[in-house]
Image (cartoon, rainbow, N blue to C red; front, side, top):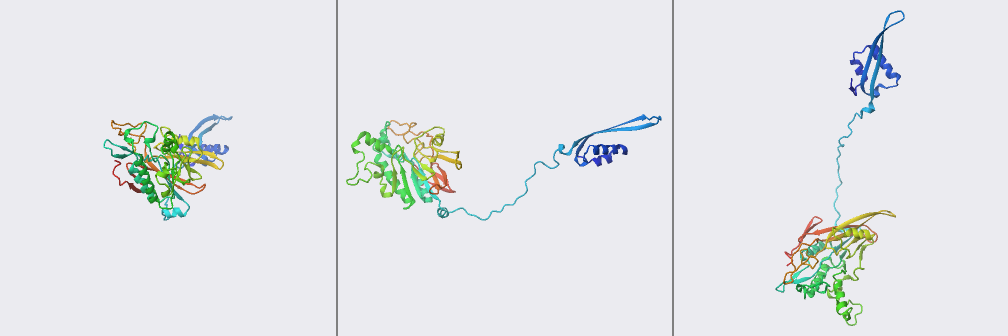
Length: 397
């Protein structure tokens, strides 16, 4: 007989047991100190009745009662184990996002990092110039800079290509294009200053491609290295990028000395051009393994991002390493190990594992916090902070 979760008194009332038997059952429970409220289930009740003769020969009836029970706690809870969450009504106070003025007034600063433009040109069979940099991507980057009006802009290296001065074999299509590259970099200098206004700090890091001009002079005309205008010992050498591109006129700081050069946004995050090139998106992890500071780097032309948290004296310390990508063309027009040329020396289109973009850093000075945003660019277009930025330049040719 199974009576799950049955009240014992109800069972007794419905049973056909004799009153004496029920009394014995009650006595059994009481003698074993079992509270009727603690009984969860009655599994079995056996009643054995037998007759015996007493000394005088009279018949006497004797009942033996045995009971098998389970305690209430062994049967599990009487309520649902999982219940529906209580209904909640949430009311947020009216709020609005911080405006650019609010962010500025709270001590936050803005920095835009512009990576690897590879400004350069090649000539087609009719001697028409074609860019190796991506004018559409640069146009979008300038739009974002003009929109943000940042406190700091950093060119993180290889923004000039200089294939004529490369140590690698040169295609004839790139001959006599250096002047056009310098003119385009001079135009970029004027564009960036006009975009940010007079108060923004602009820094230009030397990368391995900018360093080509110094190496070329040292290797081929060392007597011309370091020459300056007459009686101007503090000026830039006349065969240097800052002089040729008129950086002083646009108040652009130049950081030579690749690969040792670097610049810091605040005390916790730096910008370098970089030396590592690791496949499968692992360059970021190389910097995280070697360094103990957050780093924005270039050189690889790919968008990458990785972070690592380590134990520190003041608790967990998280650093990040990221590459914004590049602002060069990604269709094989930039000379590379994957590139090829036709019989006129003109680059043949090829798929490069490169991605375009830039970085925006919101930061506080000193040892303050910072937030890095990676802004991708596709085919002369992106969306940043809900706003569409599209190049007005239809194509690079």
